[in-house]
Image (cartoon, rainbow, N blue to C red):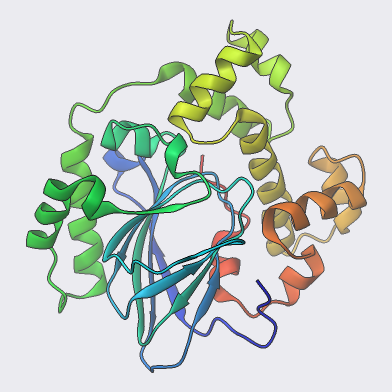
Length: 281
């Protein structure tokens, strides 16, 4: 989707999860804008699914071949593999989100992450009792800190007795430690799995194949260094993070994000700058 001339002018704040929620939630987000102007958010791949609560005007979600116009109050945003979706606010923008850890959705909701990849789903249709419970907890007039506290409490109730996925968690840790620069065959050998079995389990729990997840982590590691005002050139940073050369990194960046690294660095999108470069792991 061509976003030329359209700017993300909302403000954003992020909140870390409480220690007991860190295995499930990477961070919480609050985005807001008080006026009625249109707002457009390009969603970057971070390696985790999102749970979102729309506290302002309804949102429309643009995909490459469709527009999701159901406008749910709570929704699940899946992992990104081939899509580069964009959120469009239809009035005063208000959004609370939880970026889940790579295995967080599977563990919290006891449900496969794979069906949500490259898509969005109405949480109330999937889990009507949980949505009703959340409705009873949330006060639309509460402060941002209070609302994040309610979400933390909600996820804490889901985390009780959550299933363990130690093998997938170990693979995720290995990918994070290597900053994404690790081969699928090496991961499979290290964990005593065939590449096919590892891919199948990773798809079920994380929602994308391990190779693609590693690409997201690798790309975010370079962007994180760029945003940290690292004095190195893009070429040297890319090679340090396992890319063959700068052009290899730029191709991956365009494929995952939809723009060049230089365009991203020039971007006025506070949302992209908040999220890209901090992969969920």
